[in-house]
Image 1: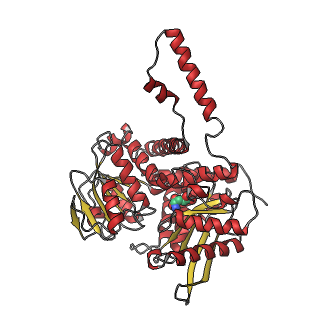
Image 2: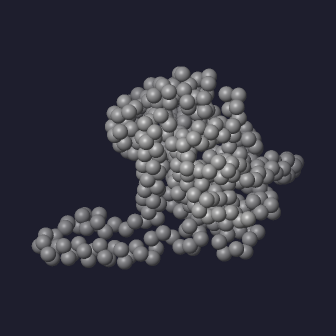
Image 3: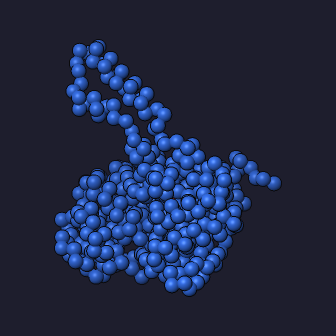
Amino acid sequence: MSSDHISFSEQVEKYIDLAADHVNCPKDILQQIRANNSTVGLNFPIKKDDGTVEVIQAWRSQHSNHRSPCKGGIRFSEAANVDEVKALAALMSYKCALVDVPFGGAKGAVKVETRKYSDNEVERICRRLTFELKKKNYIGPGIDVPAPDYGSGEREMAWMSDTYRSLSDELDCLAAITGKPVTQGGIRGRTEATGRGVAVGIREVFEKESLLKHYGIEKGLKNKTIAIQGFGNVGYHSALFLQEMGARVVAISDYEGTIINDDGIDVEDLYQFRKEQGNFKEYQKGRFSPDNSEVLYMECDVLVPAALESQITKDNWDKVKAKVIGEAANGPLTAFASTKLFEKGVLIIPDIYLNAGGVTVSYFEWVKNIAHIRFGRIDKRLDMTNRLDIISLIGEVTGKKLDEEAVRKHTKDGDERDLVFSGLEETMINALDEIVEIHEKHEFKLDLRISSFVNAINKISRAYTEGGFFP
Ligand code: GLU
């Protein structure tokens, strides 16, 4: 729920209102695009370890079925509510369209905090949830495909997938869930995908000369200072890849506080420390502040909110000093804060673009499951032999031989992770080109978020108008 007195769903509606004047989409079609198609609320019992029964509350919302299946994560959070789930489902529709992932948008939530339950209890929740969704026809490779989100990961997806497979005799049943462990039909690179996409998106923004000139930002990611809110899967991987690309991560926060080091935090070192200790309060290679909101107000080039929605609102937007905000989380800025910061000249890279890496690689996983084959398996050896032939032919013609290292480099096969990252990079770069073009066409007056909504709505509109309706 937003603290700016309008709900999260109303905020998404507001963005559509702002985009509406600039889209190539008939008004009646836009009504269909923005409507939530269907939402189910569930209350189901699970047996706790002490033998008592607890009623678990959950939702699944399918915002759009203009493409099948619809797709989106399932979050586990005590703060979850039906409005939030609907808003996040809508964001998924626009996100998928933006990066040409041929799915509709969906989202689910379970109103629990997994750390308050034993592993066995979480397993029972996941299995019963899958059973309930299957009974209601709210899950399936061609219907609706869940994935990880805030508070869930490979472990939960493995339990859900196992349950789904035990209930189904479909050949493609593995494709009913993405974000699975690799041993359970997952794809290499999915865990890192959202963070990888965030880093690639930010790096590419720092290469866009006309954009940078307009916002008065110096080109190149190297040595740019980064502050990351949230050290979960997305925050950790965003920080790791940004550091690998040459940026300096100067602050990282999580619920226990913020670690600050102007000379740069060793992201992997901090991650391992936190894994062992459970928090980073005692971390010595930086200053610890128990205030976890400090990270939002850091003097830095890029602020990356990678936690939950509504972190920057009417009440605190004016304390933000970053020149660029990269929205790794879904909806971290309220509509009010986003507008104010844009007016102040802050370059905001919107969630529906920046965190689309997760669903993009989920799409690759789904394709892999449907195809029943790992990417690269058929052409790998042939491709390598062809490249070796070309190298030796060049050697014969020129009389010059490549050294062993160069031959290895040029004949290196793309393993699944390389192929996934390459497809992800291509996707992020193309999507950014399209939204920056719209931003520039409107002389930078429509911010990147509304430009993204315009592009997404245009694409969904074409799916309806060129495909027609079932009468
Ligand atoms: N939960 C992620 C998101 O919000 C990934 C969704 C998916 O892979 O389906 O984009």
